[in-house]
Amino acid sequence: MKFIARQAAPRAAWALTQSGVHPLLAQLFAARGVTDAAALDTDLKHLLPPHTLRGIDAAAALLADSIAQQRRMCIVADYDCDGATACAVALRGLALLGAQQVSYVVPDRQRDGYGLTPPIAQRVAETGAQLLITVDNGIASVAGVAQAQTLGLQVLVTDHHLPGPELPTPDALVNPNQPGCPFESKALAGVGVMFYVLLATRALLRERGAWPDRAQEPRLDSLLPLVALGTVADVVPLDANNRRLVAQGLQRIRRGQMPAGMAALLRVAGRDAAKLSARDLGFVLGPRINAAGRLADMTVGIECLRTDHPSTAEQLATELDKYNRERREIEGDMREQALTLAQALITGRADESAAPPAALSVFDPSFHEGVVGIVAGRLKDHWNRPTFVFAPSATPGELKGSGRSIEGFHLRDALDLVAKRHPGVLLRFGGHAMAAGCTVAAEHIDTFGAALAQVAAEGIAPEALQRRVVVDGPLPPEHCRLDVAEHLSAQVWGQGFAPPLFADTVQVQSQRLLADKHLALTVQHGKQTVQAVWWQRTEPVPATATLAYQMDVNEWNGQRTVRWLVQALQDS
Image 1 (cartoon, rainbow, N blue to C red):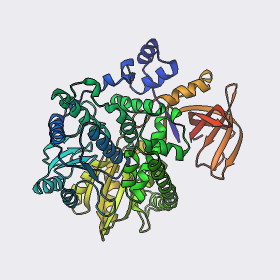
Image 2: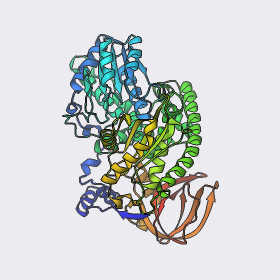
Image 3: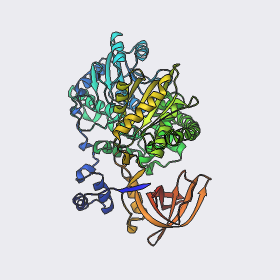
Image 4: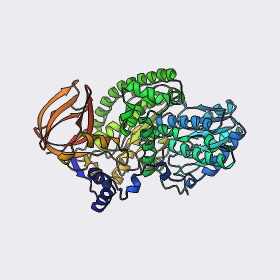
């Protein structure tokens, strides 16, 4: 493993320090491109204005008219955490604005596939709805939108995914990534797009005199905990606008202001809401919501997020926690098998002089479709290569795959190139730069793997495939303190705004195994002795080792201490 140090702009770090930012944070923020303290201000008044989203005025008018006429609305959601939170935000937000007849439909991952398909449009029509609203999907649903309109439905598409060559023609379309949209942040999650649509709808209803007494105007900031959860769980880049949304949501969660289902999920996970971090949204709450869509029905997740009854929330949270434990067991078995298959691709080449493939694609008939994305991420991290993992589809002769990419390789664009070079191999595909999904004809799975590897070999420099970790350099010993660790934990870190990762050469005083699968270390850092843990590692480290680690706050027997979470060991 090679460590690459981030470089902080000295002038930016100095300017941030002069603005009152902690010197260590100033260095970290400057290394992540922050040059002005204003970008760190999380006040809601600094959110990008809704009116700069293309199509949002038409969307607001459509919703305001439907609320005024008390028309039936039906939301078509997605079966991941972003889709579930977007659906809950829509249900809660529309009710706050006065809508009384709002239902939802969430496709089944295996039976229905993704998004607004013609059969889903038919199901919505059968509910008696007059307005169909998509959340976190729809930009690729050309046929589904057309079918809904043929059935007499008006359609509002809210999405954030990249569009394909043909756009649907709904009555209103809001997506920051649609052509011609001037909205500055292209990183909004699906839940963020729906939140913005509700803000614009409230503004229009205000103009129409819906609340003569401004004190009666509904507060949509109560939705921000859900917006924060969906944004972090969907691993979209945390640009300044998304960081504000997440920070505002976290502030409310820490004060106990959140839906009953979120509070119940935190209880079953054993987490203290007052000390919740952005990481907890992605690694504690997100997986429990996602587990419903992976192993069962995302209706359980949506109901957990929309209920206001503590007893119901507790029951649903317990059910989601059970699904998540099952998911972990399935994932563990699949991960080991997938690692073996990937190892064969790396080392089992007939021509040993040839370079290993620049991208990996693995499949086994026993794989579970619900966890292929998680396993693909694990393999990507292990081999530092774009990776797809496939499982059998409910449709005979088809395989469904999920992929994860490395920095600098746009996965959806790569799929588009594969589709053009090999017509008929890819039946469907979509996604983002870093994550994508596709359906492949089973007979062409080997062709797909070879084609993806070829596209990756053309687009990724060989040195970029070397396993490396980007670090923030050494941690000054004077900053290895509990108050600094707590201050770091309170910040919003995530995709595109990486949490601090320090690297130091230390003396390892002792090391032992925890539960036979984690490595516990005691290290000498300057004049201090620090406890460290390396999750999911059992191999010992050298007595003198250069470690990459995150600072963490460990709670044990009522005591809070600094702990390092080791992420990597630099090659000697």
